[in-house]
Image (cartoon, helix red, strand yellow):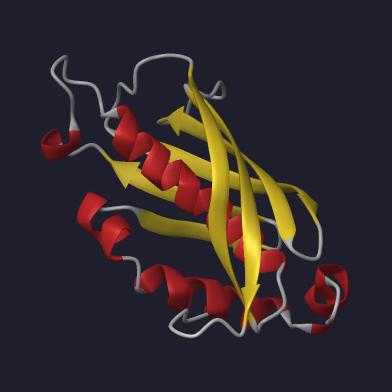
Length: 154
């Protein structure tokens, strides 16, 4: 089995970006929430979430479940971007801290790889409202690499 660091140097950036974008396009949950893929770098992915009344809670803020889902995907795709092309990733665990209400019209969710191993990748997720520099939510996620798993598309 190849090490993630070896493949990330061998796989052209454009090929990796196309692989991540193709996988994101199959995400029905992200489509339902209206999440958009903004940028893909090796080890970092940014998603955007527009405010949608259907996904607010009783006080009018975007529901924590929607925030967590998009942050989880941002972390997942950041991890996917550093894995070999034949690997898929699934979330093994995450912890989210909600620091302030999700108030605003558009949100930026970034996932950044903290450390990538052969089978586990640890990522940090940050959620920002609009152009704010301070996150309103942070996540730590651990993702696992899957190889040759029937029914799991890369």
